[in-house]
Length: 550
Image (cartoon, rainbow, N blue to C red; front, side, top):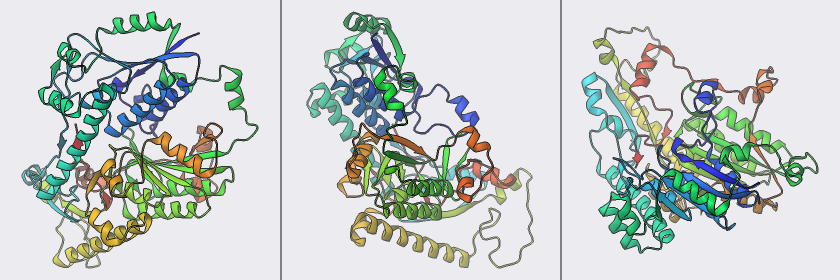
């Protein structure tokens, strides 16, 4: 029975399955990126799969996610099976550049006759709330190392500084180069011609057809009617349902048998903000990575003789310095066992996210990954006057000159500010030294690449901050090759993974306790308002979260 695989990318894609029950319920119909990539890889080798059709548009995907999917579609196309993309419009009153870039990976592109080809280019935006803080009576007191560590600028500036503008310009330029090159190669157009079309966009669907940007105009029913004629498929199935379903053939059954035992490749994830302690998650938000949980997972992997290689999947903007350092140490300990550790960067692996990845044997990133940001920031926002305006006050009795140093109720003294500057210098020096050691670069060369600067994966690769360009599947292949394993004869284990029964059992050791997820909590009224303003950093190693690529 012939199956037509369907990818509905209008809903968005998850990097990591939600950790909390509420978040899982809200995202219950969303596929993970790994599921979609695995489905395309499996479908290419499955005689029952006749082809794939993808619905594009809607929720934005990151450039790195799109590049992962482009690679998976290219792999699927090597099977000779058709891959078709369709959309109502590549942008309707908005940019459709990244969605169209993804579409060019397919054999055919269909657009609704009333749609547009909104390949309007790339823009990097930054948000500044200093003016709002001034009006609210919040006093931002933040310091950074060095000039490109622009997370602090969100709160201290009203516009881009010269270093921030320089960095943003290169981020946009690098992303634009990647997109233009990808479109040119797949649509068999000169890059200069692609740039001309971008500058004249948005284009009406017919103009896109005439320019060779799309292959056919038609509605959804036209796309499926044409595929039915070509393939004569018997049924349709969402890609994530296809990869989740049980074995259907004797060969599938053989692959699921517990014998003969296959060597394992472990996947350890570092997702979201990096904090001290256990993994945490908001009921409505994404996951966070605790150093206790990730460290326990890395130790468990090191103690399991069946695990022959490890992929460290990092999708994190960073966070706590000490937590990142603790995870880095566990990565080094794991490497000392002789197992290859390959770091696979997702959409973002910057600041603390780069810190935990840099000691791996090989760092793999997509050209569009956001990485680097080797720098540090710290400080606070003084909300005393803001709270007073709404009738909230706080008093404290303290012992110790610096007992209230980090209080959001009062400014730093000159002596406290000097101590803060010393802390920044110490941490920045340590970050640079360890990055230079891990990457095998002279410290002065690494420092020139650091300074808090964010790079695309392509630029990071050119500067040896990243070793190879590619997605998770490429990282997995590298791990297998380094461990002498057959890529098709391994077991893949996500660590830590605890089912409901495991979570209900009382922990016996601190490692058992570490792999449980703790809820994210806020302590007190002041902390809640402070967090609502976006002021408390998740840690000293945090990238500029306000940057947005569109």
